[in-house]
Amino acid sequence: MVRAYGGRVLEVLTAGDVVAQVRCWLGAARRVAVFTGAGVSTASGIPDFRGPDGLWTKDPAAQRLFSLPDYLTDPELRRTVWQRRAAHPARCAEPNPAHDAIVTLERTTRLVALVTQNVDGLHQRAGSDASLVLELHGSQWQVLCLGCRERGPMEPVLARVRAGDLDPACEGCGGILKSGTVAFGEVLPQEVFRAARAAVASCELLLAVGSSLTVQPAASLCRVATRAGARLVVINAEPTSYDAVAVASGGAVLRGRVEQVLPELVAGLARAPT
Ligand code: NAD
Image (tube, helix red, strand yellow):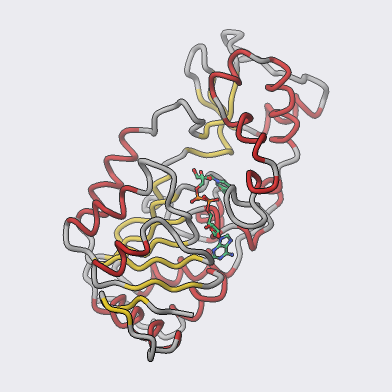
């Protein structure tokens, strides 16, 4: 299952050996950062984009629903998107053992940041310290007006959709409303990205969890960390774009379900950091 470890390929190591080694690194590191992707939430019933059951794997045309230029110019597409937002599985999803294990990591290691590409808010719901969570791609619990740039909570707007307003406009300026997530064609929130860069550049160990590591510039944070001298540990069900980088950094690649691997990893990390 696991071949990449400590910068070399050692087939004699079992998965348990590598988990024990990563646990040891976690215990010793003075600064740990975690970077998460959609794979952390699939066990909560929220599909990812590119995994075997991913939204785009099953329906490549669905990518258009995430394009800002199309959203701006096509009212029919907006109506479809609002229906999907109202019925999105994240509306009633619960955190899973992967989210819980990251909360344990926060309590047992010197965690400096939880950088996430996820927009579902499940890290905070699981109990992660909101001040450590850096949402690179925004939040689906917020709404943004593309006219006056006012932000607000998503739920009241979804209530309007459910009541029959198929393309709800901003009540302040009449502008087009969208979710507070980063669509294709939009830039990342720069302050959040800067904070994430600073956190990973200063950590000794970066865990990249449940992400294909293909979405840029988010995935480039792995390289920022390793260039600054950190070990990178990738935990994912499938190969990622940064597996070789993890090996070259003296880190490791753990192939498996995050809701199984992460709890196993944190099981032996019961002591509080000093
Ligand atoms: P991705 O779809 O590109 O990759 C997800 C990866 O996770 C895949 O490689 C898949 O094999 C793996 N995976 C799925 N379930 C897993 C599990 N249980 N255990 C281990 N690995 C598992 O997702 P990404 O890299 O996060 O990037 C895609 C973009 O998708 C991000 O910008 C993010 O904002 C957005 N997104 C977010 C959510 C969410 O908030 N839950 C859901 C879908 C997409």
